[in-house]
Structures are given as structure tokens and as C-alpha cells.
Amino acid sequence: MLGTVLRRRARLSLEKALEVWKVANDDERKQLRPILEAKAKRRIENRVPSEREALKARVRAALSEKKGAAEASSMDAKKIVGSRN
Image (cartoon, rainbow, N blue to C red; front, side, top):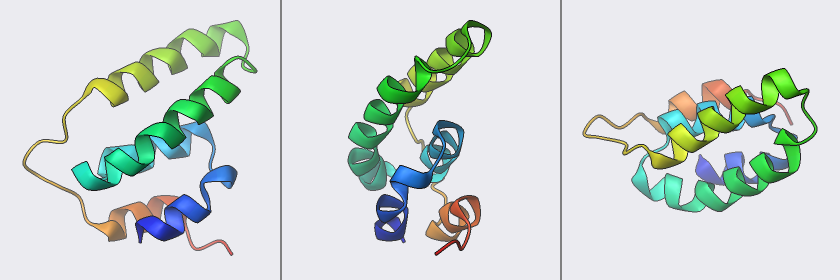
């Protein structure tokens, strides 16, 4: 499942990438971290100032959180990404 997400990463908005991050397990997050960081660098600066700070805070919070004991399944990530081809 993560392979599908990684292949589609260019099409995901930053907001959708943050949703995928929420349901990713620790191993998936290791692979997603550089993608999320790069996407944030490229896309945050293109936002209007009122959106920019809130989005920066969401990215910082996501990258600093621990997944915890309850891990979401790959099916949750698939629901977020959708079944686009």
C-alpha cells in the first residue's frame, strides 16, 4: 500500500500528505518524512500568508509527533489517497 502512496506523492496536496502521515505506521513514516518535508518546502511558500503559518504549524506538529501504540492500517491510507489512476 505505501508503494502506491509513494508513487502518487506528486499528485497529493500537502493537506492530503498530512492525512496520510496521520495513519502511517513508524516504518512508513520513515519513508514519508523526506517526501513530506520536501512537499512542505515547495508548497507552503506558494500559499497566501494567512494560510502559510497555520500550515507550517501543522507540518511541524506532524513531524514531531510519535505514532503511539495504535497504528492505522494501510487501508486507512488508501481511503485518504483514493483510487485514482
